Structure formats: structure tokens, C-alpha cells
Image (cartoon, rainbow, N blue to C red; front, side):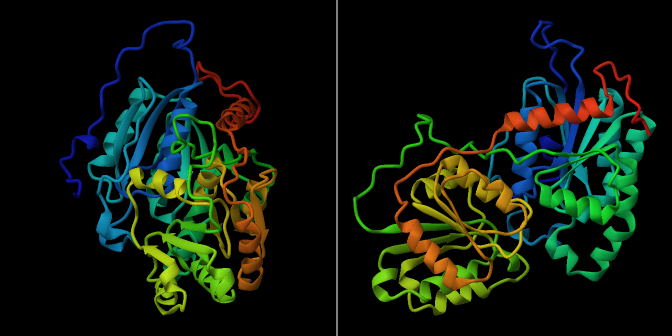
Length: 420
């Protein structure tokens, strides 16, 4: 079912009155988060929602969502745009506008009106794609006019697919520095991204705070004991790849690793590949169809509903993420929140993300032979669960530290020397 332009979600819900109490004082810092909404559902949509809820524990939070980030026909997942695949909730009293369209009229003016009414002290922009750059530039200028401190949280310096499109790469390279100049602080998830950001935008003397990605623990079983589900005591190891299928994701490397195995080895594994194909990257599907071991591979080539995600991870023994490059990975955070063993390539920010996680087996990228060895090693870990290493409390602490660095107070008066 596709959302229509008359959907009630486009209206700004009135803010319910807050009960005055010591726990929710009216003097709490006011923060507005701007990021991906559910219509173009992606990992950034989930992260934006989790961040809003986490910040709501300490701050007075509102949200402006990007509803239509590009013409739907240009989106890799165009066939599912607007399909209700997830249900998001928000903190009590959180005012949510869903949301801004790429063509602005009349959505942008409604968003600006909301900012003028809310008057947050901090505006947090989620950066993941150049398609929102023109909207972010206008919002940044509005923030400056309203004396709102602007913070940009990075998930990528630029989407890897956009980097391969000359016009898109040129557009971001030309205008993104203006957006960075308007910001007072930045958030990254790892040191790898910090170095990339500082080098790319020459901001060595700007406040850049490292805030590790929080866990996607919303699929954890209610009992919370972390135990592996009951299943037959056999030698079978159920492998899972989960996430969109793109050239840099390396899904075809898993097929190559299985094909390097002897028949006796491969008989101990079953592989489930779950993901939506982007950028016409059909090689993984072709490799699966042509593989001599295709009867041991299940291919779910679509963006699955939220209700299916928990079942897929509960049925898995080991998750395999053979990325060729990556800054952060939502599926990795989901895996570690479940306590599952994970075979993951040692690229980008994933080395830092798995630091201290005892269930991680790291391998070099684009090396099916090494991946084969790692899968055999992971076979021995099936049925084992490991404690997670990520925490949303670290997110709260990181943002609190950044706000102190910027000198932003709940009254809206900036007290530090960092005022631009």
C-alpha cells in the first residue's frame, strides 16, 4: 500500500501539555532532530527514530522527518516506497512533522514554521545522502537566523553510489562545504570517519565528537536472557546475510567461499541471503542461481517487514557481512545486539565497531579463501551468544559532552567562546 499525499502523517501533531514535575522540567534543553522518515525506509530511518527516542530521555525533543527525499522513480527501492514495513514510536510530548519533500512546497514552509514555534536550542541534521543537501542548506540558514546551534551527524561523507555519479559527486563537492561552514559541531561514529571527515572538509579545529553507533536491540526477545533458541543438536550451521544488496556489500563473496568448500564441508552449512537489490547489482543473484550449491542457499530478494527481522535472526547461527568498504553497519549492530557470532570484513569503521565483541571473526575483504576459513571457524560457535558492546547511554553522554563544548544551555543562551 502506497502512502498518499493526503496522509495524516504530513500534518504537525499538536504538542500535548506536559505535566510539570522534577523529572521533566520545562528548562530542559530543546533539541530538534532532522533525518529520514519511514516513507523511504532505510537503515537511516531506523537510526533517526532510535536517536529521537534516546535523546528524549534527557532533552526536550522534536523531530522533522524527510518524507520524500527524491522522486520515487529514482529511488533504488522505488517499488516499496510508502509501504508500511515498520512502525515507529516517539517519546511522550515529542512533536513530529513528517515531513519535508524534496520539492519543498508546501512542506518546507511548514517545517520552518514548526522550528519558529518550537525554537530549539540545537538542531541535529542526519547526513547520509546528497539528495537532502538543498533542504539542509535552507534549514541551516533558518537555524542561523533563529540563533539555533547546528550539529551534523555523519553516517557517510557521501553515499558510495552517489560518488559514482559525476553530477551528484560534483554537486555535493560544491555545496556541502557551505553546509559544514554553517554548522557549529559534528558527530561521527568512529575514528575512521573522523579522519575522513576532517580530511575531506578541512575542519581540524572544529568540534568533532565521536559517538559510537548504538545497538539495534528492538528485536531482542522479551525474556532478554540472550540464550540461543532451541533447535536440533546437529552439525548444521545456518548462515545469514542481511541488508541491501549493493556492489560494495560483497554478497557474491559468500557464494564464492561456499564453492571453495568440499562437499563434506558445505554440507554443514545453509545460507539465507535477505536483501533488496540496489543499483542493478544482480551479480549475487546470478551467482546463487548458477552455483552448484544453490540448493543450500535461500534468497529473499526484497526489503522485509519489521516483523520478519526478529524471526530471521532467531533462526540464524552466524551472520556474514563481507563488505568491501563500510563506515558503519546497521546489520552489524543488529547482530551484536542479538549476541550472534559474526564473520565481518576488517574494513572502515567496522574494526572499531567490533572491538571487544568476542563473537566477531574478522577477515580481509574480497578474499573468499579467508572467508571460507572463517566460516569453518564460525561453525564451532553456533549456539553461542555473546554480550554486546554498544550502548545508547554512550550516545547520550557523547551528545551531552558536545552540547557543553558548544556552550548551549537550556535557556538558549550560549555561554562558551565557540559561538560563530
